[in-house]
Image (cartoon, rainbow, N blue to C red):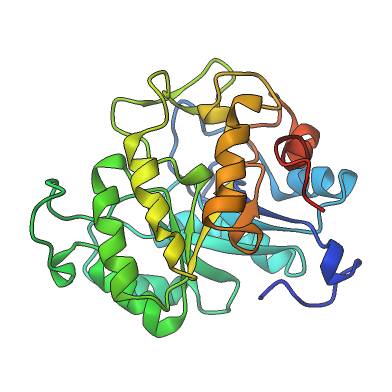
Length: 290
């Protein structure tokens, strides 16, 4: 609902790219973590993204923090949100080992531009048949604070933790939850980067079982799913027609159109297949949509 403000087009035709990343060159002003895929000199700026959005009629986008979890690492994200308040909202990150996640969340969300936080782990027993006390889970305080402050939780959970998520969704039905990238949760041995510099999840033996175990969350109205990251799991080139079945299942049998969110996952797709094609991927995979 935070996007339903004044726009150059009516609400019914607004296009929101709901999961992208931007970062600039590492500097004193904008410190960030440096990696092989994000060397210090690499830049994927908000202006570059806006140029593509304007070219292909995308009105707004959700910027998901990348390049570090500490407060200082969010400097460029906050800069972009302040510079383009009519185009962007943000999702922050939380350090895994932090004394007060509540304070960290509130400091980032002070001006309302950062709406929520992305989580990659839950923290609890690895045995799916173990007795679970949600109050003992490592991220319980994060979920509790999200419930108190109406923060969104953006989930790209590791496969080993997926059996714990339903306990938290059950405990906090008021927390808006967005599963990233087709609800695929990568395992430690299945995630890698391809030659085009894109994150990949090895699905050579089929979709991870964790994906199917999460489909039961369709019963909770507060859970949404990104139709994004197709390039990372498909065994085919764009338009990834081997994923038609999973898209149709999300649409007609599980979550429905009102709880599905389209995203490009910029910048990983700018070279292959390109931003334009990612704006058309839903038309290709769900051609029956009005």
